[in-house]
Amino acid sequence: MFVKNGTGILKKVLVSRPTYLKPAPINEIARKWKDTILDVALMEKEHRLLTDAYHHEGVEVVYLDADPMRPNSVFARDFGGCVKEGYILGNFKLDLRYKEHVDYEKRMEELKIPCIARVEKGLFEGGDFMFLNEKTIAIGMADRSNPEGVEEIRRQLQPLGYEVIGVPLNPAYLHLDMCFNLVDDHLAVTYEEGLPEEFRKKLKAMDIDLIRVEEEAIFLHGCNLQALGDHRVMSLSRNTQVNQQLKDHGMRVIELPVTEILKAGGGPHCMTFPLIRE
Image (cartoon, rainbow, N blue to C red; front, side, top):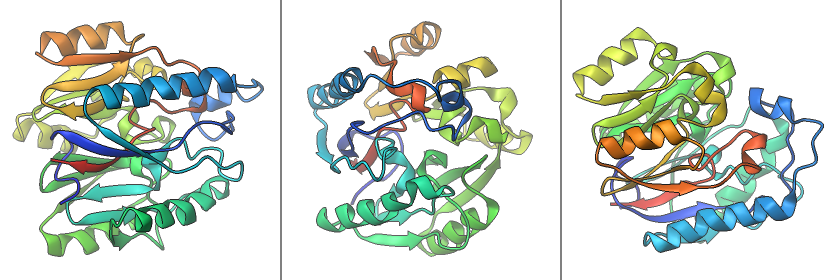
C-alpha cells in the first residue's frame, strides 16, 4: 500500500532540491518576481529546513536529483498523484516542465511504485490532486488541469472504487492546493468563496470543518500546508493567523521560515510528493 488518503501518518516522501529554480512568469506569484535573481544558497537552506522537519517527524525523504533542464522540479507534487495502488502520471501544460514527466517516471520505477493511470490527452498537475477521504478525490481545474484530464483519471480510477470530483476554480489560483487543503480528517484551510457551491455542499455533507482565509492568503501560501497525520501539519512561520487557528483546532503546527522558494509560486505542499501514507 502506498498513499491511502491525504491525512494519515506520512511515512515517505519524494522531493527535489531548488538548485536551478528561477521565478519563471508562469503563475500569478512568480510574475511579481520575474526580474529577480533568487538566492540559491538561501533556497537550499530553506529546502533543508523542510527535509530536516520531515526527518524529525519520522518521515523518510528520497530525492530526484536537481537538473538545470527542469528548474521547477522542486515542486515535486506536480508530476502526478499517488493512491494506495500506485501513482497517476500527469500531463504538464507548459513545455518548461516537460522533462519532469520523463525523470519523475524513471525515479518512480526505481522506487518500485507502479503507474496505474496516465493523463495523455487532457491536462493534470498534482497540485490539483486532493483526497477528501480514502475513496473520494477532488481535482481542481484552474490553470493547469482541465476537464479532459479529470475525466481520464476518473475512467482509470473508478474500477478501483474511487469517486473523482472535478472542482472548477479561478485560473489565477493556479492549483487547488493554493486555495483548499485538507489538513486533518475533518478539517481544511480554504478561501471558501473561491470554491464552487456544489463542492462546498460536498464538504458540508462530509462534515469537513473549514478554517477560512481571505483571497489574498492564496498568493501568500496561506493554504499551501502539508498534513503529516496524527493531528500534525506543516505550515509557514509567516502564516500567523492560520497557524493559531490550526492550534485552536488541536493541531500541532510545524512552522517553517521559508520565503525565498515561495517567490517561484509554491510552498510546502507543492514541494512534497507523498509516497507512503498509512
